[in-house]
Image (cartoon, rainbow, N blue to C red; front, side):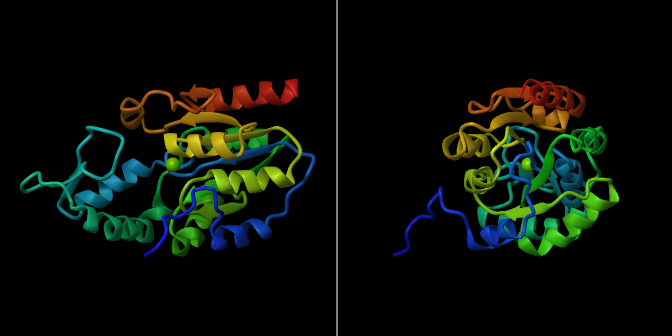
Length: 226
Ligand SMILES: [Mg+2]
């Protein structure tokens, strides 16, 4: 019998990446997700699905149940979803389009804050994501996380005694950070407007954001006040 994973535990590969990070203890920290925050994940996924006779049915904010076959509209089964997404990350991570305004906002904010990209993606796709970040002017340290993000954010917070901001599209990541690193300012942002329309503000976020311009202005004002 195997125990359920502990949602407050830091996975060993994530701990190893965090240990290699060079952090400045006194400088504000900006922790940004990648998919649907820095890169248009759904746009890329749609192209990938089209090439496989599949499509995304925009009914809810979930991959399971909404990826369907073109020929009979049947949903892809749960056991097929994981290998499909692994294939997507392997093939498409490097070619995803960057979100409008993200690189410029981060470049400006990096004058006052240290930036870490905290992205849930398979470890083998980490190098491709790092290359894509660099190519699009966002060559910031990248952590490939698995599971809830609270443990990684809590670990980062232990090393930085300064204001911190967390930006993510997925509500349960906000819940995890709220639980394990509650003093982190949590901004909810969903880059794809079709996806954003399916989801209200995350219950555990402080603010829902509509653009990188808005995120930039919010964080700049926050850092000025701190
Ligand atoms: Mg995301």
